[in-house]
Length: 205
Image (tube, rainbow, N blue to C red; front, side):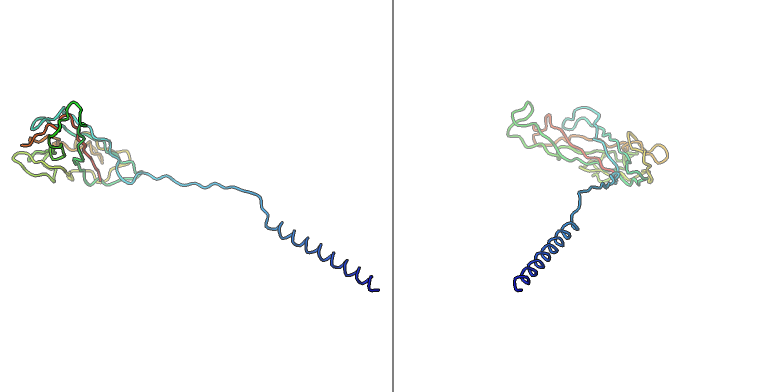
């Protein structure tokens, strides 16, 4: 009698163990999933202001107190919407000298700097509207010049500034005239400026 009860108890225990095992397997299956994928997209925006091309200089080499270069640049509205053009700014940003040992570099001479150059505009006529310069007789000079006169205030998407004064509805045809880049005639030795290049920045906003 005891043996029969023992077998029955054993059978119940085995059945219970199988049930638990099955239940455990069921839980594992419930959290199993296959791999998947999805794709999203991000938008690329337009520029938020005007784009400006690298300035071009017309007029030949500069020498101390001699020669001048006009400055040309293309300024375009590529924002995708009309944009107000409030002012143009031109500034001398830096000078790159010839390295020591090159044809024009002379050891022991004072360094060539932006102070050896200047932006120049007349004090009368259309070019006189360039501001930020110091008057020196019939001209005015300085390291930075700003123009805020006669600029279109609602430049369209395809409108641009290139080579001249405003010309046409909502279009400014280039940098206003009268502004040039010159080399000043200093009392110091300027041999280090021989063959140097001057960097000028044109900004629109």
